Structures are given as C-alpha cells and as structure tokens.
Length: 237
Image (cartoon, rainbow, N blue to C red; front, side):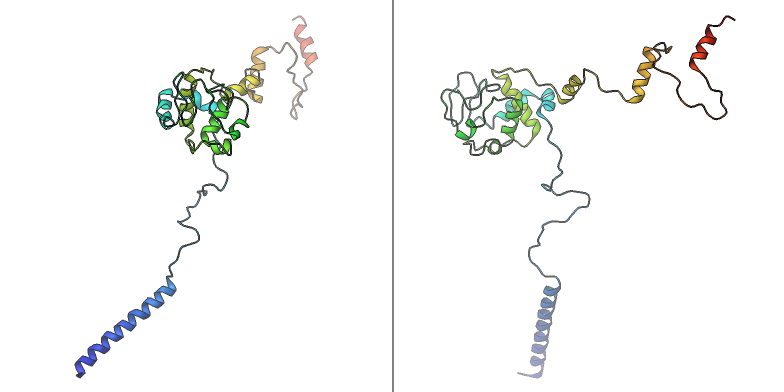
C-alpha cells in the first residue's frame, strides 16, 4: 500500500470515527423513547376525563327541538337487530313498536330478555330510555345488548321522539325551566327592585300604609311625622 492509499484510508477511518462519536453524543443528549404522556399540554384546556366536564343536558330540554325524521335515520343503526312496525317479528332484539311507556323487559311476544334488564324494573320513560341509549351496559350491567350506545345527546333525543311516534305517543315532558316556573306558582321570583316597583304600581298613593318613611332624616333636615303630615293635609285652608 502506497502513502496515498494509507492517507485516504486514514481519512475514511477518521471520518467514520467522528460520525460514530457524534452519533453517540447526540443519542445521549437527544435520547429517544416513548414519553410518559403523549402530546403537548395546552394551557387552559383540561384533559378529557379529568373531571369538571360539561353537565349532561336533560333529555326534556332536547325533545322540544328533536326531529323524528332524523331519528328515523339514526334508527337505521338499530335495524339490523330490531323491527319497529306494528306486529313485527322479534329478531336478535325485540320488536320495538309501542315501547315507550311499556314495562321494561316485559311482553314483546315472548322475547327472552336478560335478567340484568329485568332487574331494572319500571317503565321505559324518557329518562330511562335516554340512559339506556347512552350506554346499555352501564344502564343494565350484564345485558345481552351489544350496542355501544349513542354519544350524541341530540341523536338520542331524535331517535327517542321517533320511537315515541311508533305506537306510543306519550306527551312530551315539560322542559326543566317550565317545571321550575310551575313549582314557583307560575312566576319567577322577583328581585328586590322589581318587587318594589310592583308594589308601587299596585298602591301608587301608599294608601295601604305598607310603604312608610321610617328612615332617619339627614343632618339639618326637618323631621317629618307621617301622622302630623296627614292631619295637616286635612286642616281647612
């Protein structure tokens, strides 16, 4: 091997050694591996499932704006297991005609309901049907129902309204705000200012005597006796 070849070989080995060294050092500084928490934190955004999530909207608040036609579209997800026409046959799941208001896990042409669903008891009211469609397994742990549930509250409201129109026709529940107003006697409680204005409107002259000047006069102002003022008003002039 001549001198030129040795020189070239030396440069190649030196470059390879330098590259290897840089690789080792870089690996020590910028080491790989899976982080304990994936992603990057965003300030002001709470992690999902850490609590403090938005409260579930009551089904009674969603039903007034529900759309049965959209509910029929949602029901297509159920059609593989259920029929809904009057007199329809049971399949993997029971026929669902006139289900709203019916006793839970009863009837339906002898369909074999699970013991878990039978143990729930009661009837298929609005809240129970909403809870069932949210998560059948949470509503009745051990149920034979394999459907995971509908996560969208409006989808549930739409399909529940559609179910109700298929032979049940129960009256829609009152919205929570209407219930609160009815419990309060039909009127929302008035604040202090509103109550005072209403009182003045009902008795503008103060003839009931319920509104009296009982405050302490300002310094230097003459004291006014309400009875003396009345007597003075009656005196002939």
